[in-house]
Image 1 (tube, rainbow, N blue to C red):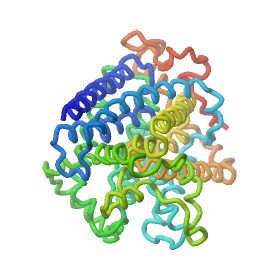
Image 2 (cartoon, helix red, strand yellow):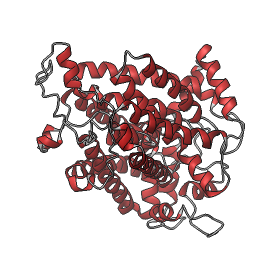
Image 3 (cartoon, one colour):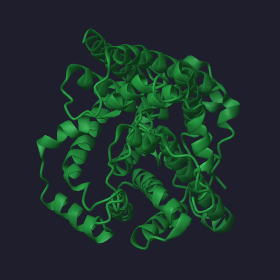
Length: 485
């Protein structure tokens, strides 16, 4: 199959280009290295480029569909087009400063009581819906986003440790939050993305608080080390993730997960055979099925993802015939038991062919670029950074799909987290703001070490990682914390 080989070669080129973009971001700081855009592209590597390569080369033997020559050729064209349009739209979305201002700011005083109050509220709710799940629609909703609330708590605990790293209390809060959040991210679940989100929010917060203002060489070492440790943690955890049965892994109770994770910490075991199940993904084969079947066998479904996203919160008890997710539709079409990941390109093609793929690339590029702009403007606000970093596992998984489902979980977790911060600000905000600020200032930390703050060792301005976009200096680097009382 010559087209399969062509698709494999295109996948290799795309991996090299995306990795090169990451390296440029690290050393030239032309875009925040840890950003929604870059994590999405990491997901494209995992779920599309590697998946397409292994499917085309025949190394992925568990595939449910072997694409035709025409499908492989089409996928080889669609992948670079999608990436180019996505990256271009992200640049445009970043320039739309008005769009970033539409996102709530999650402002609150940066004091010890404030951080602990928000982290405690998030963790309490996440813990409640883990050990005592509520039946009905509310229980289903909180079951979907409880790990994101735990991620917010983990992010704030990380910031507290950064600002008070020699304080035993900060270490106690950090380690306790990490232990409980990790259990919450695995209770009743078989997927890895929730646990991955817990692990990712730690370097995410550290990046925006400290690493963002450090040299490229030092950050390359940090990111490489963090990636290696994270991958090792996922490898160790993976054999336990399918505990129980069914979609929600009913055997994976809070007590059972706590016992398993304790055993992993005290006696970690590495099963190298699971690595291939982490690296291999069925996204490309599922997309190939869609390319082969739409519209020749199955008709296009225009705007199906948007309709599903908007109508999903309506309970089926109210509307029994509401739209099914594409992953469920694909499951029935392919005659398999589990829901499948159609892939974001598969979503676009199922909805409208080339126009659908272009639409998905542009819409998601604009959204992710706008989010990255807001992150850049508010880089010194730990509450905003924690909330927007609470869904990183899902951000990476968006390319895999079911894309509207992951976006619904991302949106739900962020909206509820913003609401909790706003409620706490309105109730206890005046009290916690009376305490001394513990906002971490990377420039002050460098001055304390006798270093210059107007230039880093590489001669680059540490507070202008977005300089190529000619942004207003007042909005770049200094952030938009707006948190002092």
